[in-house]
Image (cartoon, rainbow, N blue to C red; front, top):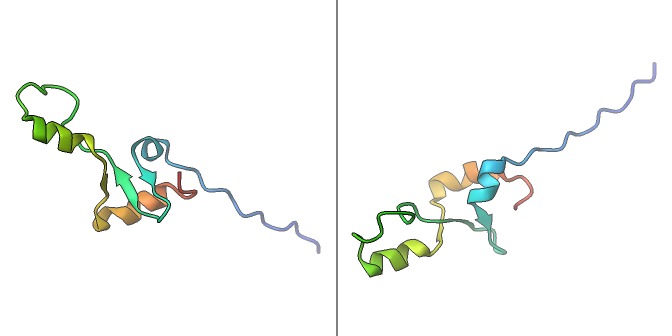
Amino acid sequence: MNLPKAKKLKLKTHRGAAKRFKLTGTGKVMRRHAFARHILTSKPSSRKRRLGRSVEVSAANAGQVRRMLPYGL
């Protein structure tokens, strides 16, 4: 009996994660800082500069984020 071959399914990207995380060329997962959107007058300039920069996702969470971004967006 001839059965049709099972097709390998495509993985869906988690759209929320795609908007929040980026993968670098070397494979690191980058994220933006929290607490940088409003009530900025009470925060020092040095803190606001630091919050504006992107940082690497912690090793504990990087695997979860990578699974949500199967094609490395």
